[in-house]
Image 1 (cartoon, protein in one colour):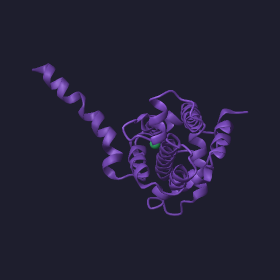
Image 2: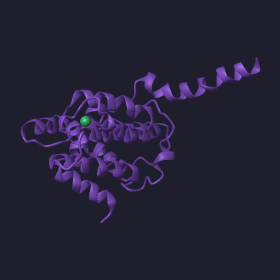
Image 3: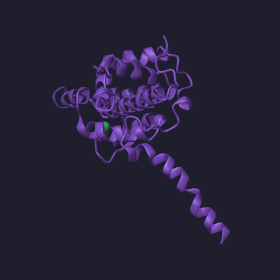
Image 4: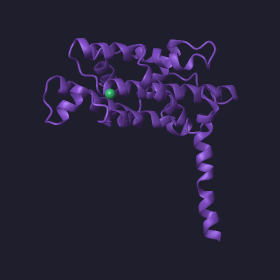
Length: 214
Ligand code: MG
């Protein structure tokens, strides 16, 4: 079985469908893209899941959640994951590993989703309280995946508006997604965050060069 299919099956076992994640993407992107559908968002999620580094993060995080439920981890890790301790932080770091693939637009959306706890993120939160389930990793990883898909969507739609691109390509056609979507594009993002990376990259060498010249 393809690794992506395994991850999708694992998500289903944890009560999450691709459409649930697509709905999160839709929630953060609909106001920027008239005519956007949950289906298009779900397709983006599916494409992001093609990436091996994303698959590995989900396999690792969900395994840790499941081992926590079975109380099979050594202390103090077991207790930290059970309580979803705010200062633990590795769950967020792993989520940002997904989000960062598509640049700074993803980062803004991750922050929003992580705070708002909407849709499936709310459901998982409730499940943790009532059913003794552990989703310490999964909730952050889903926010990270949705944020990455939102960034991919914004980049893709921006490129299509400029007349280029292959946004209509079927799932699986974007094997070189990293380079193809690497350029920051304003579409779907607040101007500050869309330009943040380019501005940062442009400003960094300047003081160094000035200092050397003196
Ligand atoms: Mg968490």
